[in-house]
Structures are given as structure tokens and as C-alpha cells.
Length: 381
Image (cartoon, rainbow, N blue to C red):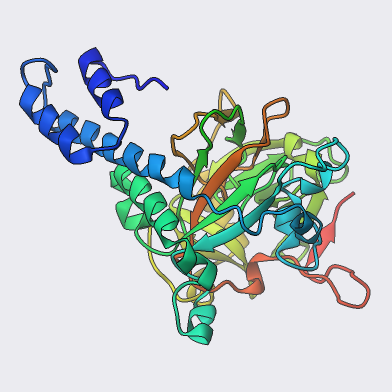
């Protein structure tokens, strides 16, 4: 592992400590400041100190990685869309392992956190975290502190409601995550792993209006807000005949037929409520529910996007692949997937936050329980 600092002596000093003794590293850095390390600014010393502290907690995280609950027997349960958040877990591709001869390998996922997922669960059990999380509290604390030191500018955003999804052996398909606040995701890859995650730069789900290029029958030139991507389909918000926003479900490959039109400046379209779009401000705030979010008409959101035109990015993917280094991206805004040909078998830690404490059904498509016909969505084939 090489840390690319401008000063080679600083790099050697940091690597010699390997994050084990943060206090001694600070002392040595102060002692050699202006002589051996040739530091020009005090803030550079601060940045190096923060990186050393972050690396210290990362190194303490992996030995505490809890494997309980990740056994092979859980895989079939995790791929059932009717239980255990199966629609999201299906995106992790565990059902592909048996087809590829990985039957005997350890695979699975487990979620834990410093807070329960929802506020009503906190009230129900009269505690902030589940027993499994309490059992692994040191593991969670090292995760929190390593992110705290690695991304000091994000401390206000990442100081509360942290949860971690532990993943082993997943062939993650293209998908977006659930949004519960304008907060980022962080991913940490096991040391020695050759795993790569591709993060798509366009479209920006929930934040951008896109135009259909015309390859899809009867939809050429129409405007949509990309809303959600799962393994086999793409959900977008369009406009129905009466001028109201409406969910449309397209095949997953329809994402290639989109072209950028404009950004929804400073706002995030999280769902449809009362024939209007439910909007979340692009700022960090703790809210008890999405019910209180402001509403905007479809035409108002489109007009806002026209005032902030956007272009197709030069490179439509960026890649996360550095082991033991936190990678930050917005999983609810950017579709992401495992890069085929890279090693999927190692451990990964995915961190996310839940500052919006309750979610309403406005952000989801719904089907009838008896016939499975869509209630608030049109299926485009």
C-alpha cells in the first residue's frame, strides 16, 4: 500500500507507524516539522494527522468484522423478494453464485448500526440499536471514527444514524439505494481484495431531468426523472395525460436511451404524493418523516431543470477499488455495480445513514396483493 504524499519522508514516517500509535505519530511530526519533513503549512500537518488516525481505526476494523449471520443458508432467504428486503438483496446477485460454481464459498450480508433503521423501531424496543449491533459496538465505533477522521468536512452529515451493511461474496448488479436523506455512502474493501465497484455518473437519479432519445417506442423526446434502478428494471417519473407525475417501469437497458436535460437545482425528487413531486432539500437535516416534505408540480420541476442545463459526463463511470481506503459516493443518486472479472469473494463494508427517520410509500411503486397488477405505475415493455 502506497500513500502518495508530496514529501517522501512524511510518507515513510506515516507508513512506519501504520496507524498503530497516533499520539507518537503526532509527536514525531511536530518534532521534525520544518526540518526533515519540510512542511509548508500547519493545515498540511493536520491533514496528515487525520489520515493517520483514520488508518489507525481502519486497521482495527477488519479483525472485528462479524461473520455471524453470513452463512450460505441465508442466501436463499436474502433472494426472496417477499421477505427480508429481498428486492434490494436480489441486486446483490447471491442467486448467481450457485450457477457459477461458488456453492461452498462463504456468502451473505448482514445489516447493523449505531441506530435502528426507523424511529418507530426505536420507540417499540425503547433502545437505539439491536442486540446484534450492541454485541459488535467496537466494530461500529471504529467504522464511525475512521470516517470521522478521513472526511472531516462531512462530520455534521455523518455524526448520527450510521448503519453498515456487511457484504461477502456478492456479485452486485446495477442498482440504486434507498434515499433517507441527502447523505453519502461509504465503502471499504478488504485488504488484498481485487474487487471493483463501478459508479455511474449519469443519470443522477432523483436530481436530474432526462430526455428519452427515441429508441423506446412511443417515448421519444419525452422527459423523465430517473427514480430508481434495480437489477431487471428502471423506474422513472414521467408525466401522465392530465399533467401529473406518474411512475413508469422500463427494462433496465432503457438507461442507455437517456440524454441529460437539466439539473433539479438544490432539490431532490424523492417520490409522488397528491399528484405532485415530494422534494427534499440538498442539505443535511434530521426529519422525523418524509410526510412533511414540500410538494412541487411536475411543470415547476421541469422549468427549474431547464434553467440549469446539464451535459453528458466525459467518462460515465468512476471506479472504487482501493483496499482499506474509504470510497465516498451517493448510492441513492448513482447506479453502481460489481465490475465483472474482478474478485467478488472478499469482504466489504457499506456505510449509509438514516437522518430521515421514517419513509412513506410515496417513494415506491405498489402492486395489488391479489392480482399483482401495478397501482401507481405503468409498465413499459
